[in-house]
View 1 (cartoon, rainbow, N blue to C red):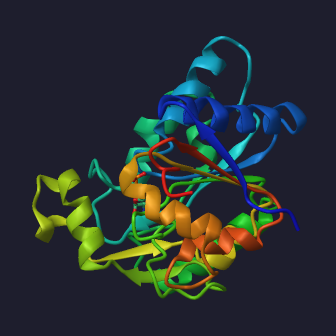
View 2 (cartoon, helix red, strand yellow):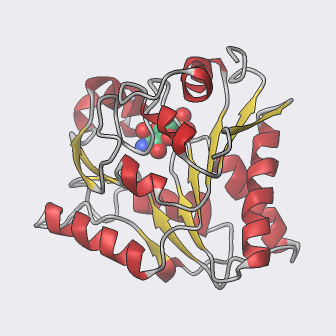
Length: 245
Ligand code: GLP
């Protein structure tokens, strides 16, 4: 088992270059690769850089497929903050991976537990995720696995913490009451089953989470610390996010 690899870039923008390098190497070796994609601001630099490389003909994701980490429960199909729509804007619109091969948990399903089980089954049928891109919350959460989540958890329904709902209110017109109370999220066990993990974090507000992730004891109170148990995990951070290492 190797230690978590830590790459510190001089600027936040360069985290996108390093992350895109990993995705490019994957698709060069395996054109039908399964990519795990994350929402949030952290991975946008990777998607932008991938878009530039696809346009330049340097890499193609056209033979691949993608699985999302998480989704809000109950947002209407056309809601701009539904994660499936965010992924459409932030990722699909920039690269050449067909939209019908981008999968996410169904936050509108009548039977949410069944939707979680069928999402796990779809990932397994695709052969599992080759490379999962991750962000991290300032409290150490990954996907929507808040502190206290089981380190062995699989895709399931979770209640969002009031802190996360306040953090995300900026996407809902600063109206906390408009932020959904529940989500479907890949579990920590699901994320750990990906063959490679690339976590991106920028900014001083992520420094404590990055410190815990790399140097802290493995604990459900800092879910990202589980990356220490992964055989191929890379953390890409700018100087500010690395300031407590
Ligand atoms: C949300 C998402 C996470 C993301 C986190 C941090 O909670 N569910 O997947 O990592 O926000 O977002 P950001 O990258 O914008 O800081």
